[in-house]
Image 1 (cartoon, rainbow, N blue to C red):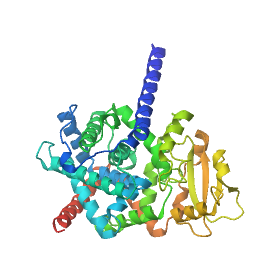
Image 2: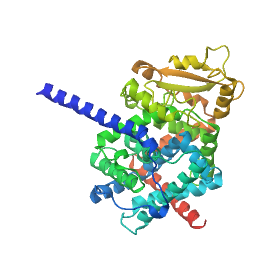
Image 3: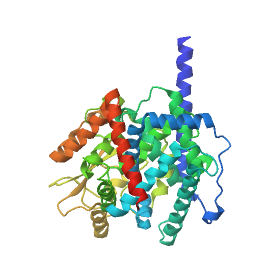
Length: 444
């Protein structure tokens, strides 16, 4: 009997893996050539998907409010993670509405209030949440058109699907670091269904909707996104990324005090599970997806990133079975690697030049904002043993005393959120912050 159960469980896990990897590959490859929307705003059709379940949707809304403080922190981490995508960041920058502290303040107050309306109000034709979703969808369409005019490219099904990860991914797979309760799968299924509906209302096709499968499959897809997309990208800080995130920090400083760019990035990378950021975490929960893709599947997915501005030095790390750790250090006399090294999968070392052309090195320096005495050091994590050996909080020493205080304060807030008094204080603080946001929005 036990053997039969173990075999059943084994085959069940295999089925989950296959379902998750198939959908992920479809989103990355097929979705990258399909626009989220076309035409004009007046042509957009707004209707509830046929699989909409009102009871599940409302349960998802309730789950958010039962964990509102942690959910908002998860959304903040998701926002930063989404900004590390070069194309998405360029599209956002092209709107001209997020590049300064003042414009970022207006944009993200508006974004927060839009999102809260989806959680707070019943979704029906003519409701505030219904109109909000249509307004956001039209804004995406307009941004896509402007990006096409600037030859950046249109917003694809891939980008909108991954955007959904930004809103639910970390809350689903890293709740223990965010003060979110995760002991009831019915609640979590409702939460996933909520975002499946929202994604559909924002123009995501069913075949690219990461929230439509069973909960276990959705969790696996989110872990794949974490492992193959956001873990590498969050380590590459371009000058544009830094300036845009700094604008958010400065713009929202009156609502989120005790925050800084460096403390925020450490917190986000800790939530994303990047080695070197495991301060005060349960290392047993710091796991990575096992290798899921064949060499051919990897090649097909990586082709999607070829030629995209900002991805010139990421093609070897995004969608890669190895986990590459990127560090910018002052180095002397280190092993120099070039394009031949990359082509032969010899990635560990210091990149003094790539493609053996000065223009490539100059582009890299410009892209990352490297100084003349700084170089990009890459270490490859090849297996479970390498992974475990890199799980530490060594990056903590890079924080200033002030940033360290800010970071640890945020961690304590997450931990205390599991206590009754801590949750009460956090929710009270959040309610005051949202009140001030609504007041600021009404005066704009």
